[in-house]
Figure 1: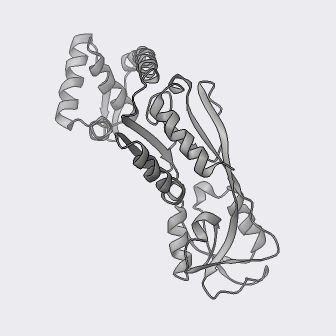
Figure 2 (figure 1 turned 30 degrees about the vertical axis):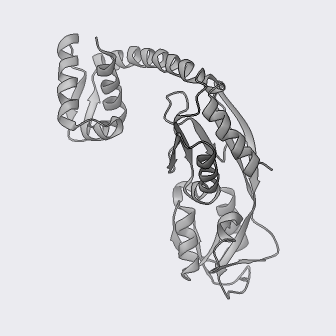
Figure 3 (figure 1 turned 30 degrees about the horizontal axis):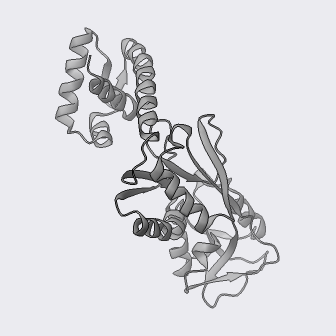
Length: 281
């Protein structure tokens, strides 16, 4: 059995369709279909049930999945061990962070790192998804929640203050006033700054929602409503002004983590050094 066929099987099981799995691992959809059929023939089992919503694991497929995941864990552990012993400052580093943090905080650091180590390629992934360190979906992850995985080495990187912003020329809104606000979407409505905004301006009408801080900043600057933003993002936009309403919204801590098997990877250590040099504290 070819390990690459199991990788294709795992991608299909996780993504649910041939198209999504093909995009995930960089193959064509017809190739994915052929490799899946070849795997099913070699095992003598039907691994997926075809439905209108996509591909669903059969009982036999679920059994294969458990074994394939264990094989994947071992293969990735070997890959991390070999990568962790590398000493050359070249190759690829994959980073993951939120959109605004990647743009405002990490981009200058990555540029400075590139000048020091031009043979290292840095790939920055910015979206709401939590990328897996054990699966090497990312090598270095920045996020606002502490890491709980036992195999991850992590540290608190910095504390980021937040503020209430309005379009330049705006005056601080009154707590009981009828104003419009830009806030997080329903999925993130329990975030501390969103809860604070609702409490600070209880009569505010929600003008718009977004899980993207840069979108919120743009809406605020366009006059759509007041918004709570990270200060490094809001303060750099001359179209915005920070407003004092008596209390400040809660800030957030940012944590950085990487898999323990990569602790000796020279290029990761070099990048982490400059991240701490530029951002920590």
